[in-house]
Amino acid sequence: MSAIQSQSRTNEAHLIKRVCDGEREVFYELVRPYERMVYATAISIVKNPEDAEEVAQEAVLKAFSKLNTFRGESKFSTWLIQITYNEAKMKLRKAHSNLYESIDDTQQSEDGEFWPKDYADWRPIPSELLEENEIRQAVQDAISALSANYREVLILRDVQRLSIKETTTILGISEGSVKTRLHRARLLLRDSLAPGIDGCWIKGQPYKKVRPW
Amino acid sequence: MATIEISCVEVWREISNYLDREISADLRERMEKHFSACAHCTAVLDGTRNVVGLVGDGTLFQMPEGFNKRLYEKIRNLPPSAPRE
Image (cartoon, rainbow over all chains, first blue to last red; front, side):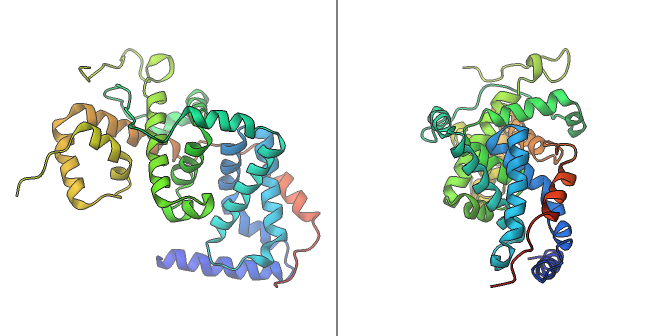
């Protein structure tokens, strides 16, 4: 752990103690840095913004009422994300959408070799372009189209930038599964995003096939 | 000592681990050698790296307007957090 990380954990432990001692307003300070993380986790599972907000808020409220059980064995953020993940799953079950989810899951099997599609020379999309709603929407849609297995790992690893170990803790899967699913998720996203909107990200420069087969 | 060559399929299998630096130095070296000679795999690598950059941008998921306000209102109305067990 770096000095900064260690300092922030000490600071968090201090904030947590104050909340448990009755300083409710300190809880805002504790959760504020993770609000986006909580919301992103929620929306990656329940998919629509209304449900995501409900799940995210329920998760934060639950964290508040259960804060006395937090032992500091994991990071506060990991614990919070885990609560969010569980809340989101519960929401899905309540909506009976687990039926759709399981159908969805069988479409993208983890077994077998994955052959990335033949898009050559994908020029980097500058991150300023994400400011444009169209592109942000394209990336979000591509993530939504992934099956739950892949989407969850991608969100935790690449959106939330959690470590492999933290991801295994939250999802309850092995390190090997995290790596395999992340790999597949990234390649599937590449396949769906590489051709860009209307087949190209930069006007007048269509993608060439490079592979001769 | 000569580096043992590696196939495109093997390279694709490890591209994600390569980006995360989750592979051995030996495999890394073999993959780099392969990339320097193979445009196909370099295209897959660049595209995958783009994906990681795009989704990790931090502005991808926009919080709904008023999210904090509604959340803080709810927290204010909760019963007090229980003391430590």
